Length: 218
Image (cartoon, rainbow, N blue to C red; front, side, top):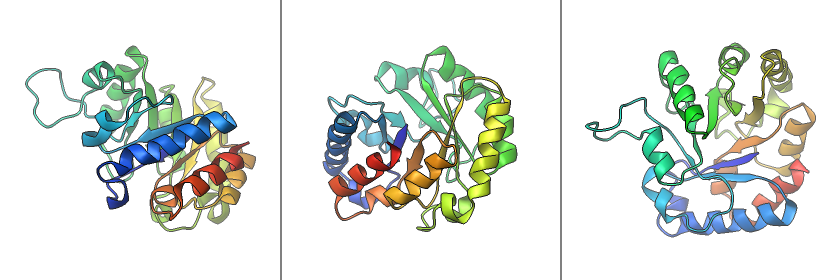
């Protein structure tokens, strides 16, 4: 799994959000790599005819009905959104909400990507059997310094922690990934995919960098 988190970067505003998705879709088909995109909520409906997973950047543990300003799993599902990031380091939520949201999305057969900052959290939340655990040390996010080179032992230990849960959860690696070499290193260390944002979104040539990352996963 190769997830592109658009965040709220200006580079993907308006029609540019759909443009990046179109590039990702083309390259995913070319290299037979699963690429998911996670646009800002207000741009989700603008991603048309995308063949891969479309993820929400965040989801709230709020009820259906009279809850204003919240993003809830059930309505995401009805809008054909595939799943969601949960507990991203830039939008952390309480542990009880993580647990309940994973369960809600699982009942809806949606993809759950639980973001964690360390191995202890990876071990804790892997027991919930989310689709993916994405480990991202907060200090490396957006730094251009990849966790796979700066803290390779973190990935190795996280792989062990997720494997110890003995379920179907897979580990994704994030934070500071800016090259195909960073991707390859993460995969060699045992990661089964990547979660990236600025390394793609802020690149001058989207086609070239998405292709480079996709090749790094092969």
